[in-house]
Length: 383
Image (cartoon, rainbow, N blue to C red; front, side, top):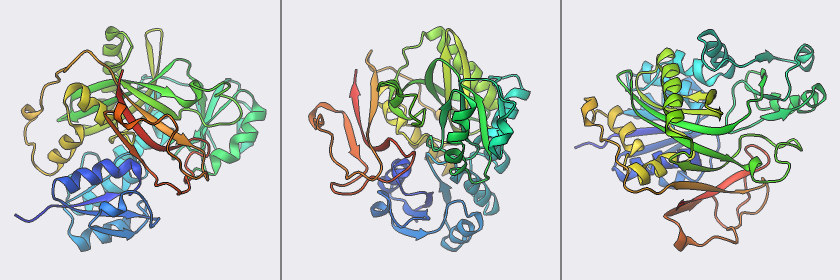
């Protein structure tokens, strides 16, 4: 039987899980990126240097190579391209172009949430520092309306800090627009949901521990906020509150019209209340599916590809959640500053981990992403 051809947009560590899965399945794996570098390239059958935001360039490549599926994990930038090219070529897809732009554009997302009365948060979209003159809600968060990975995201406590960090946020925005919104207090969490035929087949609440929570003065000194240190499953949040969180998250997804595929959500939980921070109709880029598989035996990356490639035709084939033990599982990330030479952490003891991986080889320089604490690898442990 002829092998399926899968085109993955992006070749760095957020996409490595998809690339390796497709390779294990015997698919012909193609990859695109605007840089001719990335840890996924050695595992590809074919690579070309094309910007994944270039919809027509990706369309030409997909058409010429007769791919069966175009996909990406962990990349908001790729989502509109995936939806656009898939529609043009009548390929399977999870979301429409409109759904992609509704959710990944932070201005559209906040407007939609406010209109529908879900997680109302004060916000304003601006293009120049002077537009902040009437903003008087502090602390606040400023960030680009259209970037990811905590790029350009800063916590500000006054207008002076807005002016200081505005150029940082603006430099990470494709559209040159900045959103400011009230800073939400509380515990940051993720929710990973899989939708099938308009219903949530799976919904997992995951604790998200931040880098800034683990160092003194982490919210100060202009460092980006929201940089993840570790994910933990199951969450420590009381089960009754987790049910409420799931209900709010699924209600929002249904309102947004997403009927199929994974949805990755960031939010804040405090005293039984939950508010959305961001919603992306994709798998996360932080390997959360791995700890979900360790804990519950649910292989989300397999389910994603099986459905899109026609191996799932009925919702009845989704395996039930089964807790194999009463343990918690965590994925903890290694970090270094951009420009540093990569080094294995001094406390690294591979025999103590269920799984681990590094994104760099010894001697390579750490690339810039958020500008402060860049992921260089991970380890998975029981806790």
